[in-house]
View (cartoon, one colour):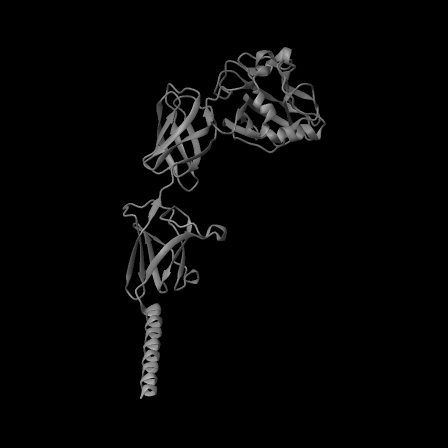
Length: 384
């Protein structure tokens, strides 16, 4: 009798276990979908869980019964669903890069069965990103072009001095905007603001820091006749006082100095390079403005700054370059120049007496030259 009872008990437990397993399997196949958590997709950061993400981020939705997802929405924006990235337990999806018109901080999944799963998720809208200006010197009333990303209207552009420019156009495809420069601008960073934050540029507009070649007044040994003080009808407009214009034929390997000299000839500006730039050139750029009325398409421009003696095989700024008659800002990482100096046997050391400077044409190929220079300067890469 006891044996029969035990047998019945074992059978009952077995049936119950089988029923439970069957029920679990059924639930895993046809149960309600749910999300356990959202994480980043990088394997080394797979344990980083998310409650929000920036536009364009690739994220993983982890849960159960997620197969059959046909639509995924972030706020009022639908994200493309790639079936090959989806399983019952994981969906890989990229957050839309566009700006939602209606923000509810909800991720919504629509399934083929008609089921809808809502999950709280915050799309973090990027603040403006400011990378560079076509030219860091633009007269008041003229148009400045700022490059960057996330210029979401309405956009405010504030120059140093607290004056605001008029935003003329925003080109999201090419990631730039045009701004009319107001009166009263002071040298300093540019601040771009949207409803999602504000960013201060690492470059300065009307940058007056650490000028090492200037035409206001011209100093040095060579070619003061190149300086334009009163532009005529055929000259480019002034962007920051006087500038240098070289308008002549330059033969191949013809030694043609443009500007420069030893410290005693250059005067006080020969001491304008910060000691930190000599010690940490990787933190600085050489910048200058150029306007090519004819393309710089041959020969070589050699630039020497920051040395305590002459070096006739200085940094070489190679062609081609063509601004098509517009002023543009050129940026050269200072560490590239230092590497060129080292390759030719020179090194930089801090000099309280100032530094030698030379800008010249010397290289292969004849050049029908007509170009202008202004504002050679050594400035920090990052605004601190």
